Image (cartoon, rainbow, N blue to C red):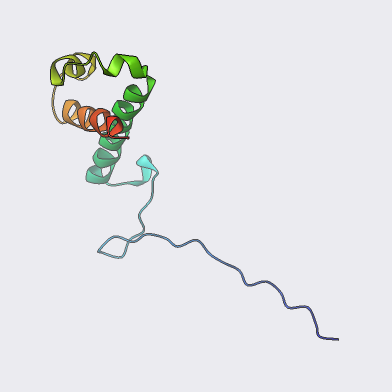
Length: 93
């Protein structure tokens, strides 16, 4: 009889920045630029989610950027732009 082999431990790959430091999704653990990028990615996700909440029949009545922009809750850039990117990218699916 052969002894049972123990399963190898598999570690999840960790992303690294160019300087070798670990990339993390925790906003409190990030630098200022990383935290801003994370915040903007969440705003883009809000736009994506907003597009998916709208009924399919409503999409036919959207007149391009005019009506879509009226749905955007952000008043200034870069937030307004990122929300729009999320919204329009959701329409592609």
